[in-house]
Length: 315
Image (tube, rainbow, N blue to C red; front, side):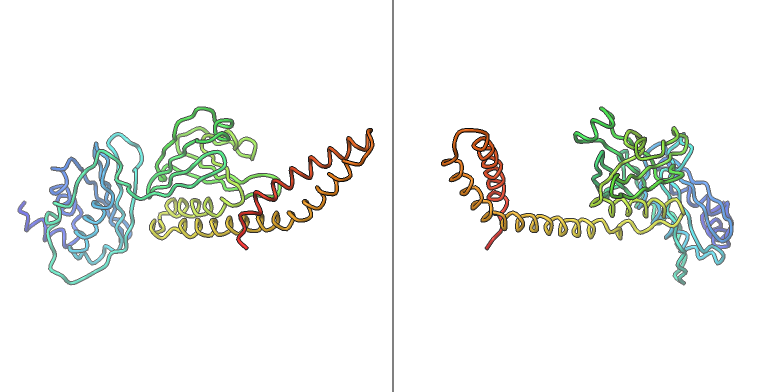
């Protein structure tokens, strides 16, 4: 069948013709496409032995199908899967924007398609927890364990990485007056995550957080849930930058309040240390002198702390 005949059938919504056009463009790149239509949605599963470039491929499929102008296709779902894997590594969904431009062959955009042996995700957010760190990419979660607390609770574990599409459930517990909060992922095909704060401390799929870190973990939960629900939030619109700025401002406010607190204590501590020094110099030998010496040492230590912390406050 000629290219023109395929194109004409594809414009009419013939699923075999659409599949043939996509595969003619992608198979030379080592990518195979499977196509299906259900409820006005076109499903495209892309499979390759190499890691697929998510952005380039989704743009290619979306532009090509839009240009065909098939009247009953309203949405497109594109999936990328490595050969041999049971589940897609990523997926994107788009509402189809209709326009009246002359339909173009899908082949016209093939020069944009490339495969990469390395991950195609160049954008990510690093979120610090109390017993580990989470790197959030558009498609994956990477849990790492760095720091003393992580070593105590997790030992010498390496990084754990899994696609967001393999997450089947999330458990989120906020902080309270006694315990820290935690974010726990249940992975399809993985061992069952242990619930509860004390079990979460050593669970490999769980990262704990304190009160100041909680907003960032809430944002992770919000994004992951949106991907699980099939309606992913725009990754560039996540609020981590704003949350970091707020956290920085809050930390600066706390530090300023702490410095002001110690600055106000400098004068009273100097007076008390002077009084204790004079009292010690005239006190007779005995238990009273020992007590005064002990109090003078404590007062002097607090005075040094106040001078160090309070001296940072600008007059």
